[in-house]
Length: 194
Image 1 (cartoon, rainbow, N blue to C red):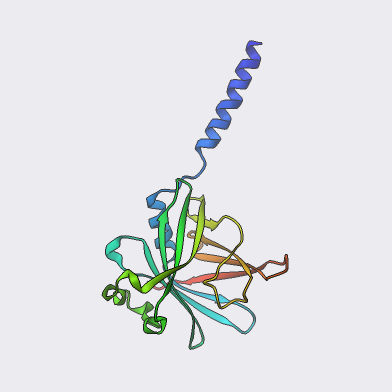
Image 2 (cartoon, rainbow, N blue to C red):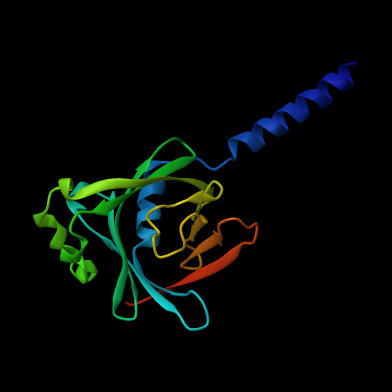
C-alpha cells in the first residue's frame, strides 16, 4: 500500500511538472511576435504569381501594438490592413485586423513608418479578430482554421490558418478552399536586409 501511494505521488508530480512546462504568453511574447513578423516577405502563390508582403511598425510611441500590412502583386496593391497586437491570456494573444478608411491614401507608405503619426485611430475599423497561441518559444499560430474577411485577395468562403516562426524567419499560410477538405500551403520567406 505504501509503495502504491509513492508511485501515485510520483505520477502526480510528473503531471504537475509537465503542466508547469506549458508555454505561457506574456507581454514580452507580444513584443517578440511584433518583432518577429515585421519586415518584408515574398510569397509564391502559384507558379506564376509572386506576392510581396510588408509588415511595418506604426504608431511606435504606443509600444509594440500596431503594424501596417501591405501586399502587392506586381505593381498592384491587393491588401492593406493595420494589425493591433495584444495579450489575451497567459497562453494566447489576439490580433485585431483593421480596415483602413481611404486605403489608397496609404498605398506604398510601408516605406515610411512615420507616415501614420499624422493620423488618429479613427481612420480604422475592425474587420477581423484572430487568436494566436504560443506553441514554443518563438512560434505562434492560430488555433484552427478560420474565415478571414480581411484576405479579400482569396476567394470568398475560404478558411485560413496562419503560423509565424521566428527561428527560420518565415510565416506559413494554409488555405482550405470553400466547400473542400483540401489544404493548400503557402510559405513566406523573410527578405532579410541589414
